[in-house]
Length: 202
Image (cartoon, rainbow, N blue to C red; front, side):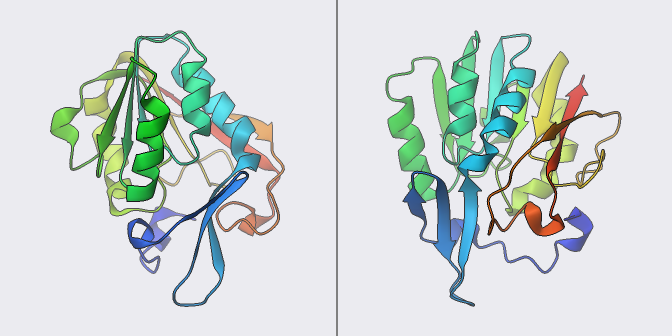
């Protein structure tokens, strides 16, 4: 869904009461009564590939959005120096903090990552998967200040081809087969079975 077409999307994800299951996070829309999936475990191959890319050079890694902790676990499986995670949903913050409690190289920054830019540094790898929130519109313009020279960035990409809805230039893409779970609200609206992993090197 191109960012230019997102004006009608309600940015109230942070205000929703989330339900956590082993295979997904969702909430019930107060407007329609329908379940809205926030994250699902079919994304594991995407999270693994994204983590592998941003961790290729090791060093300091910034993760924007914790979700189910899938990408965080993959990032921790690589040889890195530090792992900073920004999360703003209150329920997910609790889970991220509990997850990080035995990981000395992890720092949890609570609240909007963009509002907390002064707490952030520059990083060897940056991964964005923070969902439909207001600060998503700041991601593209903030990358230069977040990524070290030679560093890497990637993000959850819902474009249906080798492009990206952030309009970030000079990006390469790796196509990978995926099997989205029926009923997810955020990817298979195009009935896609191919994900285009963006790779941006600075």
